[in-house]
Picture (cartoon, helix red, strand yellow):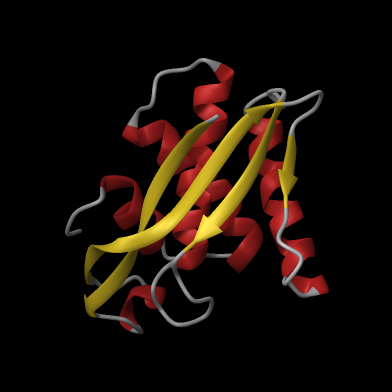
Length: 145
């Protein structure tokens, strides 16, 4: 079994302005999301029992979009998060980056920043409609953005 980590983020400056296209300063943090990957008969995401119906549906939609873009590699992905949901630490962005890394690896493609960010953005669009891009970009680069 392999695993892929993606850090959460903290916006230091511009938290609300970034939604309207204004600059922000964000930094990756040491806590994040890990995606565990195992061979499977089909491409699937194992979801924790504790999720609400709405959260499960959103995760399934986002995963379906990413799986489609990577050709549905035959893997099962489970998640472990150290980030609280809806607290401004980029949990969905970190989840999207961890899953993107896992699916790209399963497809046998090299991990590039552009490829990970493109796939993570597709997932973030399912979560948020029109995301600013700060969360998954900061997570994928693991540094100050």
